[in-house]
Amino acid sequence: MKRKPSPRRAGSVRAPRTPRAHGATDARGATGVERKTIDRALSRLGLCSRTTAKELVLAGRVRLNGVVVRDPERWVRLGVDRLEVDQERVAAQRKLYLALHKPVGYVTTRSDPEGRKTVYDLLGDVGRWVAPIGRLDRDTSGLLLFTNDTDFAARLLDPTSHVEKRYRVEARGRIDDEALEWLRRGVELSDGRTLPARVELLRRSKERTLLELSIVEGRNRQVRRMLEAVDSKVLKLARVAFGSLELADLAPGAHRELLARERNALRR
Image (cartoon, rainbow, N blue to C red; front, side, top):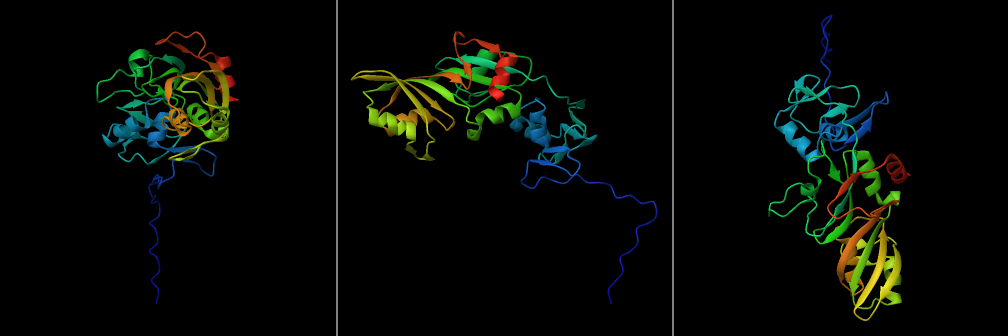
């Protein structure tokens, strides 16, 4: 004989519990309210990076609706739930978009365990947390963008958005027309075949080839590896454009805020 479930006492209320994300990081509920895990929510609000956000949560410095949480995967309803860090309410930060002319010799990281100069040494204090949109290796110079707008950054880095990054490349030896065509069509790398690229030959001699290479991907040291795949080697590399935004006359080591029309052009 089955036991009947015990009736709930009149007037009793079961406290709601915010579910964990269980692998998912973004969702919308039945009401259409956008939800994110706490680490992504803090990053989305422009407060800090996801890594820093996780550290804040694990340290017990984050409150959700007045209660300390230590689970970075706890869901947050953006615009509904109250988030606090160190007992101060977190509000959306003003979005900031910066362009930096990165010189050779700087690494694209906030701090370096080897003590090398970083791009943040060039930025100085800009008043809020910003992160680079992609990276340039230590030996590459040129246009590097920063923002605290994570949606903006994600769109620019998504290969399906087809936002080109254009590089000026000085390579060793004379790269013939057949090799240039291989670069255009895609070459095999250790992590798979590259997507088609735009290649413009600027000048070549027996010792050097100067070209501009435009790609929509952003793999680690991709341009250097592409040139190695056609039996050449990059001698000098500079990013001269990111989408519609040109490096132009921005001085090495200098940075500036993007204009509204420049931001809108990148969003298209």
